[in-house]
Length: 290
Length: 328
Image 1 (tube, chains in turn blue, brown):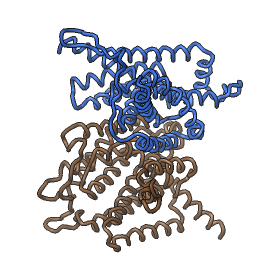
Image 2 (cartoon, rainbow over the protein chains, first blue to last red):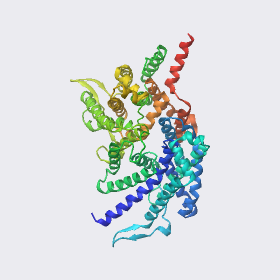
Image 3 (tube, rainbow over the protein chains, first blue to last red):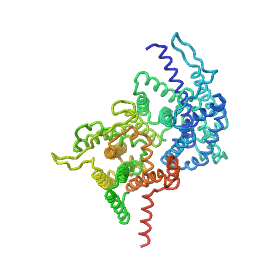
Image 4 (cartoon, each protein chain N blue to C red):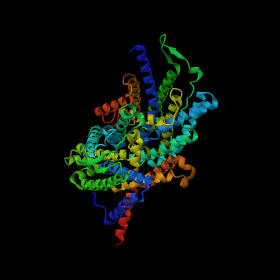
């Protein structure tokens, strides 16, 4: 194989991995801090992509669509947390899994009612539609590089907020000892609503950013959900750093799998997970039992 | 500890089984098929209860074994002659048991939420294996043209091609598996796995190798799910990757919760009830235009069950029976 082709595939893998990180970080935050497994997380990715589709049709511009879409996902996350998720904090994982499973059924059907069952495409914005030539025949699309940079920006912002700000401090404290934080006078309900809402928005933004490079179709949320779970499990549930490394590993493994083991790429990803869990049953940066 | 359900509960269960046994007398094809499906999924849900309700292992990939056995049946079924269950059943169940033992050996090492996600991931791995490879029709699924028979020498004892035979085979299996599981759960082995559910560390301190007990429970449950899958594939003579998918695993968990986990007979009732509810939601005459969007109703139903039905239908039955006894 040509090394340039390998470079392109590696870049694709990293780009896919960074996108996965955006989704998985929301999942791992919600679990790490609130102790809730949210199966409906993939649905928010799908909703984000469909919002990007509709708003781009409406306004003719993807950046504008994303700006319009972010408040929608923030509000959606807040409402879902207040109406449904809030009942789950003191319940066991099984009930969390099932309630959010019910949410998936509802979201899937609502998607079919609001939009339809057909796949849609979202055009790449004009400004980013070019590609960088690598050789006479090969080139790399600018949008994918832009996508990677935006994801990196989010990763950096997230790390900064969690490590350096007051709210980040409370989030970290809430993750390690809920009752203590509460008794120190932090309104944990508000904190949870914010965290969930932000998690939903991260998934939504990932969907919006992915819309131009992937097809927008009804089942897109579920496929990404399972793979995000794999990322979270590999990284160690609740660990942002773990999610970042896990996402990159899965992204590259998936793309390489498609090149070197066509037809078995999806199996390769799960095999990687099995291998890592054999080595460390709580993931790379997990804190023991879940 | 599992006590045998009280006499009044057993009486209710006998009435339910007797009522089910009368269904084929109506002769309506659709109903026979629907109730066969309810019974087979009842076996599936019961096998999951052994894990979730008694061993404390919440598996989100139980459908992997359900679907795998169906696919194995497809792979050994010929186009010309029916396979004999005398060897087909051991092959399908043996294959499923090996898969359950391997997946279990890796998954049982993990705990809690990791276990949920790892079982989910392994099930997806099998899902994609059948979905992406040409081995058995890929994403389109595959047919079992001639359904299995049970033959001794020349005489055919059971032919699953007959919907009546299939129905009663499923019903007898359901009752038999229930009774076997009650015996297993009352045995020393059953007491150990229930001890693990309550407090694994204490069981380890008592000297039990909990890993092997959990693995054994996982393998037994997987094999029973395989038996359900074997029968399920014989209903329509068709298998598709969706049988192994996580939706199927999720639905099985809903059945367990709806029926009441840790009651064993409850999840079977849960399976019957869930399919019944689905029929209602799909009926245009009952729910009007929502029938074409019945998944929304189903999603709402699942959420309501989780929020408001802590002990499920089985728990309700046990409580009613307890109250009656109290009055006496």
